[in-house]
Length: 513
Image (cartoon, one colour):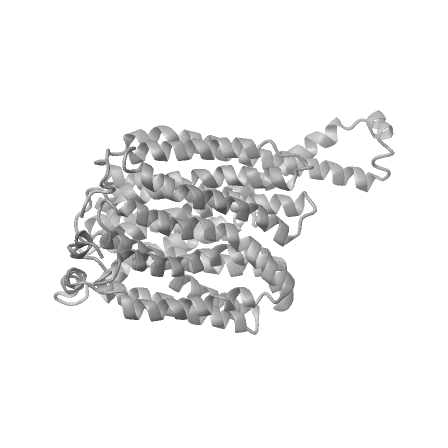
């Protein structure tokens, strides 16, 4: 390891190369992020295997997201209290054990319970990992480190649907959970033997425990209620007709009030579980907003492209997933390019370029039709994937600029929370537009069909059912177009905000702690 790395008081590398640490923590990251998308395409098989309905099986996704959302914002505090290395290894172990239990689950109820445990373990991984990376690399190396880490975060969800579809089609849905186990075992062994807990981090733990561990019980309860209920609302809102459902309405009220009281409480509490002063910082607050929109666009696209190909086009789960996998090559190619550009270009300009690419990619996807070719879908995804490194690497590099020592745990937790929340909001947004606009387009198309039109095209649609199916398909296509246009507009709207971010000293990545 270089002398500059050895001089870092908070480095987890010890006498090893920090790049080895980056590879080790990226392993678990890849596994956890993969798991957020791998189960999506397997839901019909899981429903059949657990004797449940498809609607009931969606709680497999919701339960994971809820527990993930609850643990993420408080994981920075937990890592400080428990010890960063110990907390990280606990999360890896919990994720691995719960993955085994998910694969062995005898019923849907048990599977949902084990998914809650899996979400708790997985949610604590990314914040600890990013804190380790930030503290283990010099300012000059930090952008390249986040580029390596970003490959795992960005590529994993693109591979998830393909891998999940292939495993389900050729083996059993239980193996989408079993494949996590060897990665967890390898991660635990490598972390235990190589990753270090430096004295400076131990001092943070000692300070936090001085005078006894002061647990912010109201803060934890408000986080759990606010974000837990919010995640249920986002995941089930459209299915239950939003405000038309008493269940969703109650959860919206609980979530809104809990989050409001959380902000008030954390601002006046002596030992807050979430540092609201950090959130209120202009530069860090803008980074949180950029991470939110990155998650919004990334996860919404990953959800909608395979869904379109399977519902409108005659694609199976594996073929649909391959269109996303193609985009992974664009991300792999441009991660090191963006890391190099950060030495000569301000991060805020690269983020603006990334948002512009996302807008162009979304508008390109808005040119889809009912006869979309595989190459068109794949190249559209590649275009979007090229833009992701321009977002992920500069945001993570600049987010820590000006933060005081010991705040990397909290910063990582908040950034990852925003990425996940952005994805949840985006998927809910896209699902709602699809459902509502499909009805509107169907009604308009049906009104435009006149008797002589039906007679003229009778050879194409010999039955009323065939005609209605064609109208329904076209309405669906138009709805997907609406969603992609909306994503493009959202990406474009955020571009001016990038110029409000602080300037970084070029060649040094994020400012030192």
